[in-house]
Image (cartoon, rainbow, N blue to C red; front, side, top):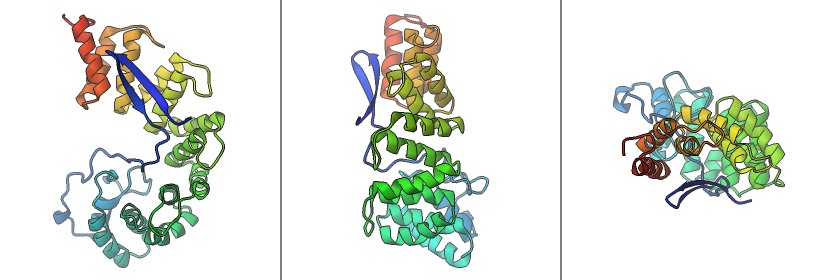
Length: 287
């Protein structure tokens, strides 16, 4: 299985989610720099966190939400966090932020030197980054799904939701292990129950399309709803469709309109088409 396909049957347009992509995952945060400028921050450690913290790292201090991988400036992080590591050599988080920056700067050797000791000491965020380093490779580090899964599994066993999600995806996509939907679903459930939004959406997809389970629109709806309430755009669009068609829930054009509008706010194509369809047909709105 190479993809999970989610079809939004609106005027012939389909939305496809690639769950088994070979590209680096994007971690998201609601704010990449919060409300405090770097110039205003005097403490090197604070600057290191502000620039380079990973979203979902349980070690992040209060007020630091983390920086999405699509937004990080690796050169600046390396400069600032290198100074922070020298100033505060006992703070694991600064070494982690620096190692993560080296990874995204394609310097695998330096990333490994910083991340591997942390991972071995069960700094859980390092399990993810070290797993990513092996899964996607970087200069000086050979790609290895087997080693990636070793670290994802270690983080997953410690209850870290991101690691549980990554480990589940390895089973779902057959990365370094035989494809095993049952094992994948087990780990997706563990992550989803902790509120990890990508796992919630993934379970929605699994139950909607019947991957390794019987199709259940009702269970799919429940997981899409959990993800949508956390702002997951594709889930919001899917809820718009399910309410419109009455799949897994009592048909409601008003609720369909609501969720399509939520998705459309984020410029989601499927939500915009769905919203246009409702207005064109006069479903739940004045024609």
